[in-house]
Amino acid sequence: AWKAGEQTVLLRRQLEAMEDGGVVVLAVPATPYRCPPAPYERASLIALYLKAKKPRSKILILDAKDAIPQQRLFENAWKQFYPGMIERIALSEGGRVVSVEPATNTLITDFGNYNAQVANVIPPQKAGRIATLAGAADKTGWCPIEPATFASTLVPNIHVIGDAFIGGAAPKSASAASSEGKACAGIVAALIAGTAPEGPTIEGTCYNTVAPGYAFSMSGNYQPRDDLFGEVVGSGFTSPVHAESGLRKDEADRAQSWFKKITVETFG
Image (tube, rainbow, N blue to C red):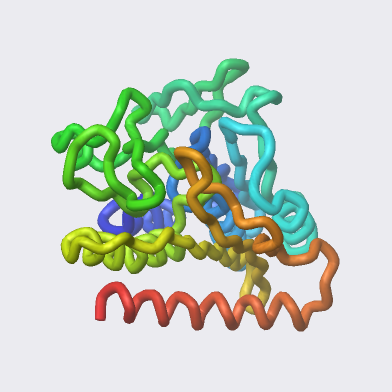
């Protein structure tokens, strides 16, 4: 259900059908993957539903990494809104899922097996099949580029934007992809016209809504640095760990405004 559609609907139906007291297991892959904080926002919003409809239920996050984006913010919010409902097992604690038995809803890690009433397995990710067919992806599964122009280093006259490219510090997020699309269009237009393109600056912001009227965010700007993107010094922002409820409400409102804006920009 990492790509919206049939799988998302199936996940919802499974949550609705689960008996109160069941365990939802969310398997999170190692980076890189699309939208780094999103699994933890998803866990939060599943917890919101369970708290209202199935309050004896639990969520177990099996994680293939130790640190997560805005970790203290998520953990503090979970304690405040969903005490005792969300547990996370990190990589060093045996959280990496190595295989799944769908027939029994069993997730297998290096250190033990976990049975779930609902299992949401987010698989390891790579660039889309079109990138592989085009020859633009390397053995990592992602596409190496020249960051100054987004040009593929493997195939001439192909420019790669969005989640597919190897971006260094640039996040695989919708806001960054939108910024990359605009920058790349200008670069390609300049190359066609025979003029020198301007160096791109990528803007990326991730909003995380963990409860109604409660959200936090992180953002930054990124520019070419050697053969990758690096964060512009002083551009990064992350919501403070300790903040008044008014700030969390403002960020929740901004998250909704951002979503509406980018939806119109992208789809018309």
